[in-house]
Every structure is written in structure tokens, then in C-alpha cells.
Length: 452
Image 1 (cartoon, rainbow, N blue to C red):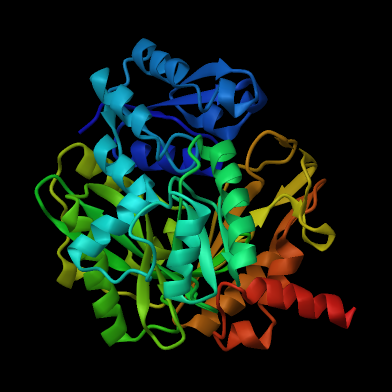
Image 2: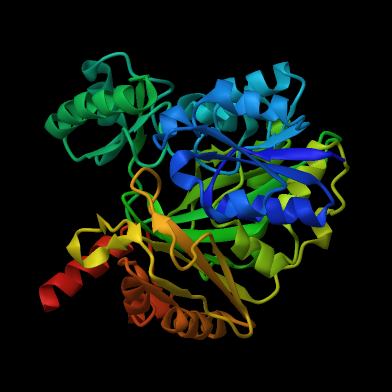
């Protein structure tokens, strides 16, 4: 096992990793920007190193400074968390070249799955269902028009190096396709440094279902069930749950088998997710693979009883995965609400600033992953998520009731948050019935606007 881990991240995920390492008896190093000098991950780590000014490009994304921090503190492993450098193949290569263990998959696996077009090809080769689309990246608008004519409209344009909804456009006819290609390429180039795009048939009103997988270097790989992530805004998830109300044991077996097959086909090691679109007719299609721990991993931990961060650290150290597929049992139901420092009634305008008072909820079945404290200042430089509230219940309704209670108990003064929106969603009949899809939130907000 590792002796010392450097956590190349901030906020609640940095705290989550520090706690897991502490339980494993591993010393920890926090890195922080000048904006995070007073953050909890700095306070609770065994050592802390400032790596630069507030902009992430000069701190949390600055590879030489992170490597230097690891070397001067003699860390023998680096955990990247999620976001920032977690899916940066070059970073993984640099870490390993410095004889430090990268807690995650290999650089080659990150690179292969990070290229959405290449990942799609890999899944086709493995026999995993994929949405009908172009064979590879598109060379011209004329080629895109030809492919779209064969697929039938609507189609979706996707950036090969994309993520987070960047470089994506839906086209309903050839005119919108040609315009969309140009905009998607420009957005992809600006965000990822690569403008390549490809096409897929657009699946209307699908569910976003992801399967948690974990593999070790000994050839063992299993899935830990699914998460329903359909409630999202601009491809950023807002509420997640496990299990999905749309999936029975038969479909879970089929989708889980496809997820394991896909991950095994690239020899995957570490935690990751295989993400699917589930159509209304129950057909499902591979969408992408995330080669890191996910924000919403706690809902899987709650229904399986497994600590994913500790498992991720262990398999990175060469420990054989202790679980077999037949050991995995989903118990009860879990929900996660992401609490963002935003004004949901004002087009989700960011709401940074000083938090004057915080009170976290408690009671049976309630878990809070957060880096907030009274007096903390939410900076303007990073993601707006300030807390994750997770509830577990014996069934879906009990987890919903507990989530309502937990949200009502939560007090965060000094900034606006998305908690009022969460509470409204939890009262919506469509949500309560499980009638959700990736367009649910837009429809919900439109109906709210009309009713006002």
C-alpha cells in the first residue's frame, strides 16, 4: 500500500479522498491555490503545498507545480479526483515517468476513451451497442450531410475530444446541420484544442444511465449497478439516483454485461463509468466512458456498501479486487442532490461570496459531502458545486422523503443555492412517478415559467 498520497484537487472530493486515505493509514498531501488557502482540505491534510494563484490554469491545471509538490513531499502516489487533470492522459504519463503512481487508469486508456470517436470504435469492436452514426470524424460539411441523410434527422453533432456538453449541437435538417458543424467545431477547438466532430442519430427523450465499473491489474472487472443521471442542465447533472426505476433485473443484467464487456475490451483498471442512453423502447446505446471517479459515486456506495475511493486506491497499489460480480447486491435506494452556489430563478447565475452561516442536515439515512463552513468564501474561479446531499432509504419514496427533510434542514446563509429548485423537483408528480429523461429539467422549468 502507498505511504503518502498527494490529492491533486480541491473542495469536497479532496476531502473525500483525504478521509479514505486516513482510514487506510496513508499520509496525505493537499495542494491548493491562493484562493483556497483557508479551505478544509488544506487544514485536514498531513501536509499542504501552495501551487499558485487562483486561476486553475496557474494552479490545479499546472502540471509542473503539482509534480514538484509531490516530489518535495515524497508522495508516492497522486489521486486526481474528478475534473481538472483527472482525464488528462499527458498528466498521467508525466506522473508515471516521475516514478509516482497515478491513481487511475493508464494514460493509453484515458487517451483512447477520451477521444469519443475512438471510444465509439472500440465499443463497436467489442460488440457493445452504439448509437448509429458516422464511422469516424467528419472531414467536411458535405460528408456530414451525406451521413445525416442516411441516418435520418434529427442528428447530434459531437466533439471527438468533448465533454460536459461542449462541442455538441442538435440538427433537425441540413441547414441546421451545416451551421451546427461550424459552431461545434469552433467550440471544440476553443475548449479542447481539437475541432474534430462526428455524428450520431439523436435519440429523443432518452434516459442517461451509467454503470459503475471497477477493475484491477489482475484481470478482474465488475460492475456495481447503475445510476440514473437524467436530471441535468446543459449536460451537467443535478440529481442522481440508484437504482433506476426504469431498469429491472433483466435489463440490468444486459446493460451491466455490456458495460463490463466494454471496459474489459480495453483492459481497464481503476474506477470508471460506462454511460448509456436508454431509449423509451428499452434499447440502449453506449455514449461514452468516464475514466475517473464520478461526482455521484456516493449513491453507489450507499446501495452497495462499498467504499469506492478506498477500492480505487487499493487496486492502484496492486491489490486484487476483493469482490466478485455475484457479491454485488443493491440494497434500498439512494439519491444525490448537487447543491450549487447559483440562482436557479435567475438563469442559474453564479452566486459566489462569503458564507456567513452553515448548518448541515442529519438523521437516519443522510450523508453530506461538502467543504463548506461558516466564514468560508466561495471563490469565483472554480465549479459552483458547494455540497452534495445524499440520502438512503429502504425504497425510493423513503429516500425522497429523507431528501426533502435534509434539504429543508440545510442552512447556507450569505449565498444563493439550488436547494429551492431541488425541493420543487422533489414535489413534481413526474419526478415522483419516475417519468424523467434528459430533457426533463428544461420541460419542468418551462412549465414553471408558464405557471408564473
